[in-house]
Amino acid sequence: MNDRPVTEEAADPGGEQPIDPRAEIGEFLRGRRGRLRPQDVGLPSATRRNRRVPGLRREELAQLAGVSVAYLTRLEQGRGPNVSNEVIDALARALRLTDSEHAYLTHLVKCQRRKTRMPEQQHVRPAIRELLASMEGVPAYVSGWRSDILAWNRTAAALFGDWDAVPPRERNWARLLFLQPEHRRLFVDWKSRAADIVGGLRLHASCHPDDPQLSALVGELSVKSEEFRRMWAGHDVRENNFGVRSLRHPLVGDLTLSFETLPLSDGSEQSLTVHHAEPGSVSAENLRLLASWGADAAVPQSDLRRL
Image 1 (cartoon, helix red, strand yellow):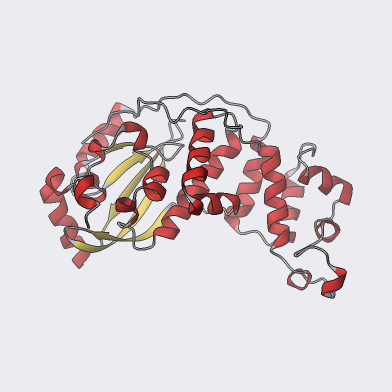
Image 2 (cartoon, rainbow, N blue to C red; image 1 turned 60 degrees about the vertical axis):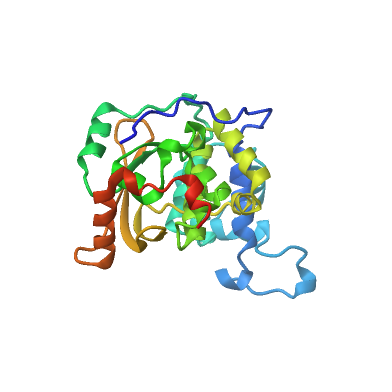
């Protein structure tokens, strides 16, 4: 198992602008307003020539949420006062937000007033490292708040690739998924996995707008990946902490694995992700083979690129 902390800094911020949670609130509200039509929320539909913009007008959202237009205008412009839970709930109902979107809006509003400087290095507790090593046959890894891959066990290396051969700065799910075709090909539903990562980065950015490494990561990926830039601009929120993933491993073929992502309760904003296969299934047998091969099954990055 490789459980060394990430010791190299992320890309030099290079003047990247910090992420402003006040601006995020406005962009999020305008985006969700734009995807609704009056008839979707029980309002009379208007002719196209009477509507200069798609979606709900600001006045219509204010009416549905029971707030003044002036109040909503200030909120969308990033000049809003402290927002109560009642107002957040009313906006969520009016905009037909999902549970994740409702939680995200609450997160944005509450975190815009909190400034916590995040450490440049992330360390995994020794007890967590020992836990990873003891989980034989179960792919498990610890990730940090910027989607950095901080520690993993032998079976995770066999499943996802030789992370030990990847420079510490590059051990990051966002960089691997958007910039490395070999990791992208491992996931049958790459788009869903990528959307989960982008949603997690947005959640972190809302509470830590002054994190220069995160700003640099978002800036780098926005320049290098059109897909990341489009997903980031969409302000879509998806917290996917459990479910099923389909992978296509170059040595054993297809695997269908359930996963659970568990936040660590030590204040580190790190999480433990564990995968397992249905007992008696082909995936379970393929996973058993990978676990028995251990590090020998971790396909070098150069070999993955030829697949």
